[in-house]
Image (cartoon, rainbow, N blue to C red; front, side, top):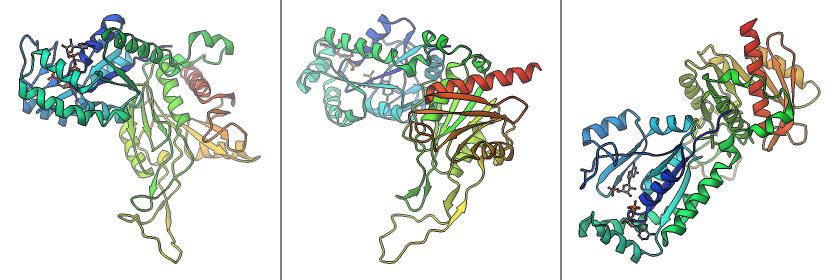
Length: 429
Ligand code: ADP
Ligand code: 5GP
């Protein structure tokens, strides 16, 4: 099983020491690369195209924006700067770490599109020190230095979005703090996947998982949000943890994974996973229609709303003395509406004695390849829990597989492996 690369974003005012610290991280850690940004600014001094920046003109920058080339881009001090998205994702998917040295607006955009990125805010001990550093850097005119000092105050206002703060007063101290952050992030289970040292405790549990190497898997996750007006909505208790855990399991098995998630508490897949955020059931259907073309598997872990208000009001409905009646209509059945013919792993959250039978019927009705039944009436399983357990049922002849109680991540690896074993067996036989 492979480990995902990590994305480190160093941001903060110009002159804070981001470039110095970014190069320190890259130099000290094998498999860690610096992302070279694209800019419309003209080269300064000895700067080299492709090494310091990719220097392009306004037309080329516009074209790249239109082609969704950038993971983020922003206007900074009168010029535009951007980070190439596909390069970053490819590096992460290869297990390499990437370090970005970008402005605060760009970091805020990355938090939105790649929530697992590690955001580090760098600042000197005081604004006077910052001014001093900019003046002694000798790359900027007096007017530019003044502009950069003004911008610094605006950038500091966004610090609350970041994960870490490093005060770069003494460089050696700041370097060791950045190294400590790097090490802590590297030890995170989300970065490791499932440790090799833990595999042999469960015998054949993970057998079959390598089937997914090189496959394209789309996972839907979280609840959907059906809007009543622009503020209130109908939703459900799905936290998105099972969906994110499944993206991890398929990713660490070697698949290319896309996560299509409704607004969930957990929607922070590892960096190589492309995250597509959706709102309503109908948005989810549109996104899945697009993403499942050429997919090898669709995992329908999302708790899609069955009903949506017939009319959604603009603005915010005012309180009235009388009752408010909201008419609901059924949402489309996503699995049945999709044009893709890829196998589907469905999910059933069932209550009561006839759960197994209802899950099997649901699988048949949805023409799914398999269905994972988790019980809402068993303690420690189902929605809004950290753990789960359940039974994997197959539409074909394969026997049901019980997945034992454990963290949702453990359960997700078990599901991916069992599904891989069954797909492999049907391919061979
Ligand atoms: P940024 O990338 O944030 O604009 P740089 O890394 O280019 O900042 O650093 C700005 C200037 O400050 C450079 O001349 C750098 O050598 C210097 N510098 C960086 N860190 C320190 C520090 N802790 N103490 C003194 N000077 C520093
Ligand atoms: P400079 O022109 O001095 O090299 O950089 C000016 C500012 O642009 C710095 O604060 C730097 O961090 C920021 N910057 C450089 N590359 C990027 C990028 O790709 N995206 C964003 N948003 N900012 C960047």
